[in-house]
Length: 216
Image (cartoon, rainbow, N blue to C red; front, side, top):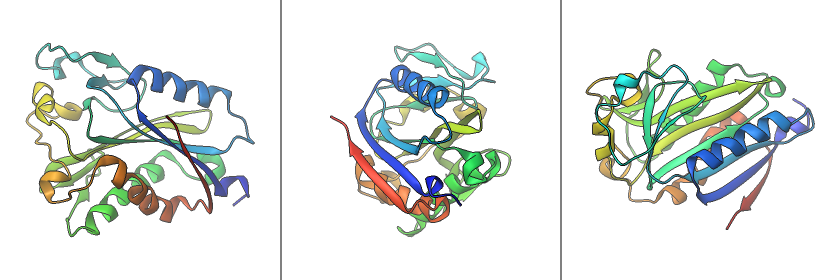
């Protein structure tokens, strides 16, 4: 592994609009070169439904005041809102010698390991990316690969209003029940869980030099 592949910039962005963050991720990916360090962005979004590139309109069950954004990530429709931990992985997967499947597995296993540390048994499904607790979904995944680099990432439900999920077929699955860390007994905020989750994922991402940057 090259020295560059061991270095990471970890950005804590606070609450940011979805569209602006998506555009920033896309711009970062378009402009990066072989010497650009990988980045992970930690963020929360105001209430928004996002629909993946193959998303079907019928999975939005009713029109609401919550905006719907058609995104270029994989997957179907999902909901983002305050109290949900969003982690975007802007990784040169060629340099890391990953493929899409291995990166998905690293993300899912990191979430599973985090929950296990709180005695919560969670699992992934080969045919439905994400992480589940007792058949309820606690985390969603959606990635985009461009020029050998990933962007988008994961959404872990921490302490949020889950009711908007009832207005959609989450990730395209009718009747899929959702859960969150708070309901499973973890009484930590999204921002408090963020470094713990990244530490778990980093057991396989293997960054040895991490610079954390906190944005106002």
